[in-house]
Length: 509
Image (cartoon, rainbow, N blue to C red; front, side):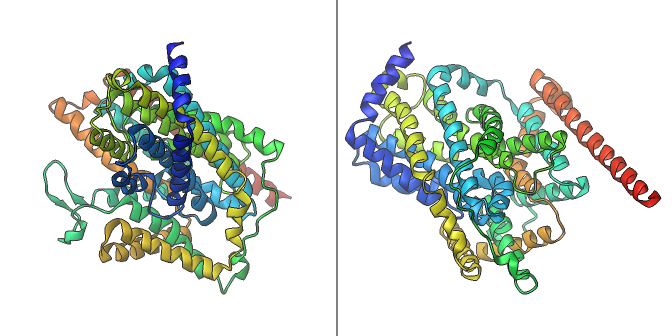
């Protein structure tokens, strides 16, 4: 009851005309930056940080919250329409969302993403208000062994289900891991796979790989088919700007499952919102295969709904972790921590007592930002979809220019443009030979986490490998992983038997 009364006081502060203006400005800026390839909410907050010192702390952080949520909303727009995610949290949305757009369902895909983002954000915001202490305590349960088990679970589970060929899935995963280990070893300080090139000492940026593989690789694929298949350049968009009753009913369970997966990851620092989006996508794909519908790969609405809800569910709980523990679990939260310190505030348990007006006004602004973003994004889905009416040679040329500008803006280095081109060609070849992209991205995102967690666990146990299976969390993860692998192999064997039986029947007839 105390939390509810404090939240009502927070709404009284957040609903003042000036603070409402900052919510709107933050949502607009976050959405605008989110649609640019290679940029995201963290960069928007970083750029705005020096400009907000003239504001009072409550207004500044309310605007930051709007940017945070708006960036995740905006990421999905270009991810769906152009296969060009603004940042890593939208990678999983490209797999089915872009296929929906290519099949003429762009408005429906954008509506699915907007409602999914709203659902995940609202559920996490409600949970933050009433269960923040319980959620924050979850981060203390996870140690290096648990992080490694979680990363291994994501590696094997996703690689075994995203492709009809397990070998191709594992090959993509290994490629992602190989890219992730390039650079200076954080423990020993030695160079790894840099060939003595100074520009590779800091490693290969996830932003560069994401834009190259997903966006530039798609540009190359479309360009390669232009003369042979002109129809490949035509993408139509149906006029229905809303979800049908059947589509809505199909998406509801995925939205809820995705939100449930994303909630803990806003508290546990395991790579931000990228990890739960991949896990939500993998879960929906496994459920689709088990049901025998096999809609994935053709524009499955559940494959878009779940990652969008999962990614946005992390935002509210990430702010709970920042406010209650002073623990930033994402790049945006880390920048906001710096902003708190600039105002002479230290996030943590005492913040609720020392600055209750700011904290509860900020929490109330989460709910307002969700409503504002839904109002901004849902009606404009058909308008965004009209981007597909631009002649495709001009459209994809524009995407290429924005990819290059985005990468150069983030690194200010010509070498990264060459890296963008080279990895883009790799992405094109992966499409050419039907090698899945998701395991590569998972290897890039979770590879460093898995390596550092394994090292930390072994160092803390003096090289005793039994520490990797010493807790109930790791035991559960490994048992579930074994079950996933068994079910995946059993399903593939059953499918092959069915295909062989069908072929023999056709021969006999």
